[in-house]
Image (spheres, rainbow, N blue to C red):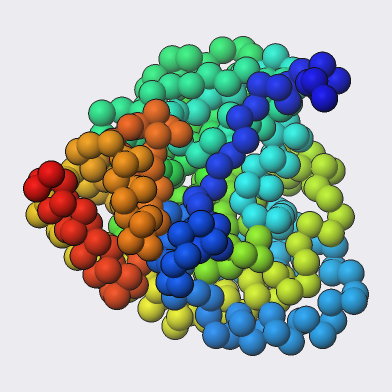
Length: 369
């Protein structure tokens, strides 16, 4: 069927292509063990307490969930010292971003973000008939806040800021974002995507909850997919002032988060010991993996996340395919217009050793052919 019956905006969209599924690679190559370092998942999985809570919740799966995820909103409110009614829980952070765009973007509205970054911002802007205004990242792969201020017009509605940024792993230095927010015209709203914020090691770093409490026009978005290891259950959330949250609640589907996911998220927040264990393991392995890759002469951007942004010094698709033959999946950044860069998730110690071993093998083969 031709696309003449489609909504015009849909024809502009490029489908999001996630990291290749383990099941797909296993089927294609006949490999038993696959290590996926492509999707920034928690390699250790969710907290055992979260697993136990989800197992128990299965027995009530005939019941609809409480539609607003009240228990989770209350727990998050207590954690961030923000009223629970200022939170909205969705089916993953990407769903929350879609809801924000649906609530705010009118045809002709301008939406600003830097590139390369998470593609969901462009998708929802085009879907709602808005105009994407794309600003290149700075030389150090951070958001160019000065340039963003320059391109704001009376048509600007939203500014998306991914901090830390995906796929580069970079953050804005202390104080820069707060200064930027103070310079915005009143008609502009900032959506602060903080999917990886828990991995930032700088103490007292300004983040979304602080900006909301200080009265800035910020909607911050977070997820349970990364640190908490619940990518498969899809739980994300956002929070802002009551005024900014009102239209987002209006477009949210009534049962956005299922009972099992809700139970897992609640228990994950309670397991502080496990959370700190994952953060520490990520810190240690990130340092070791960075040094190993640098010893190969590869450029590794300083990361504040659970992944590395690496210039592989060659055709990244060829390298990714060779690694896949060895059972290792990484994420080529070609979709972001970066032909030599890869995004590589920090795995467990054993996974990282296997990745480095496979990379050595491939590089040695390349130099002898």
